[in-house]
Image: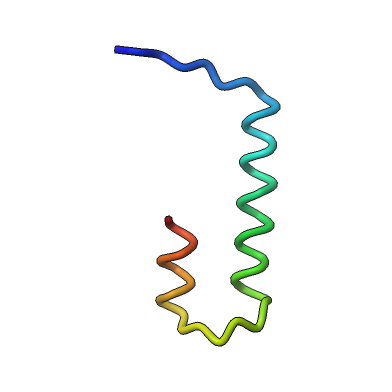
Length: 43
């Protein structure tokens, strides 16, 4: 089993990017259905 250490900087970058993606999907005018936004957000 390989353990990968993830430092705090990586965690912060991941959180910021997920907030940006979620905001873009929620407030951007993409013409997508709600279920499509959920699928893209999960992937």
